[in-house]
Figure (tube, rainbow, N blue to C red):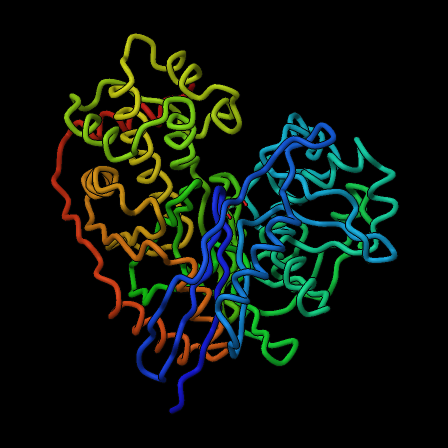
Length: 458
Ligand code: LFR
């Protein structure tokens, strides 16, 4: 087989990169061709994407890679661009950590009962969701919504700029909380409830489909791409560990039971009609924000945290106070009085591991799939201390890697397309090229005691 060349552009919370993958039918070789900053800034009172900068950087990715057979872009979910009747951008897209959605969840529930919302979307209730952002927009800037003719999620927008194709890729469409996974279409009822004209939503296209020669849609939602890199076995749960920790398990169809709703689990679209049953946990954002205020290399900080006495404190890592605080260290110090920096961060990491255990138990209960092993992927899987804590707390082996799961999974779908066997073939090639690290569990009763603290009502 002759070699084919594929370009994955993966845009994360603070940086983006492009990986050029060469596929010979058996093995994948990759080369990072470009890396760039991704920053958001306050413009017109809101935290916004610097979308023109990203557009220019993606041009550079493409130029540096040279001719390729296919290319595809992924970023985080829920954010979007709106175009007017002349296809002009209606303002720089707003970042989900902007405060425009504060208090909007309660307002959404007044419009749509929680049970109905879950039955129609299967999506975890979070104030960052696209539906909540659209509600905020219709309340705060109705003129912008009135002028909108096209809704595109961020990767859809960046693809459209290059291909002229206006489509919403499936994995990302399902994360918006505007898409009905059972009906297999946008939910016009939900949209009209929040004041959005359903005609702005373009057709949904499957990952692996090719709307245009030379362009194969990857899983455009970064979590979708990350999980697409894995050759999962029965009983494998995964944690996509980055700014967020998404804990999940793959399921053949969405689970919309009352139990799943009460546990606030999410059903996000995956490859070939499957779903990812999961839940967002606040993740390494807490550490990233700590370091933004108290800069030092992460490895130095983790060395000291490792030497700190364990089990000194517990914190609810999913407290809304941690979503977008001005000063993360100050908030944590208030939540964990009397502890020094290292003890605070050790407590945060232990509390993360305990939350992972709770989520895995909830997912197992809702899906009926027992957890035999956890695969931790993404940048956060380099945190060996957290990996070991996770193994110890959950009592199952943790396999860490690949670090670049998102870009690799993006490539796997570009190469294998809509053929599950072909994607599996690439996933096996990815498993051969990366060396996962295994963390065996060491039982310790103190994890159970900390878990009990999580279960206590606040
Ligand atoms: C991870 C992620 C999560 C999503 C959050 C916000 O990067 O995409 O899956 O819930 O970011 O979009």
